Image 1 (cartoon, rainbow, N blue to C red):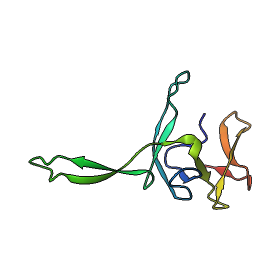
Image 2: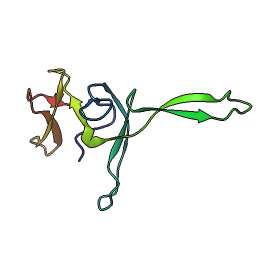
Image 3: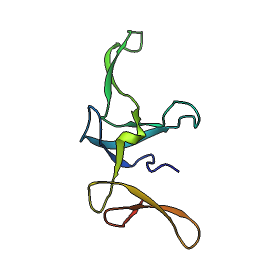
Length: 109
């Protein structure tokens, strides 16, 4: 189980966009035994410019798109303490697995 899920608020902790935060739009799982890393696409993070050719329906030009970021460079932002945190996993009495903030102990939804 990953410590980051879709629609989580995350902050970048390493790289060019360090300190910026955004919402996870998509998780891209890498293969377990290969060198492909698990990555995430985060809104307004790791922006690249793509040049599109004009068509009859699209004027083309320069379009900004979000590129994937390695999951290891992201930290979840806790809703209660409002700062980046590590995630701890625990089980409820019924056996359901939950994520817990290591700073304040609050359940991360």
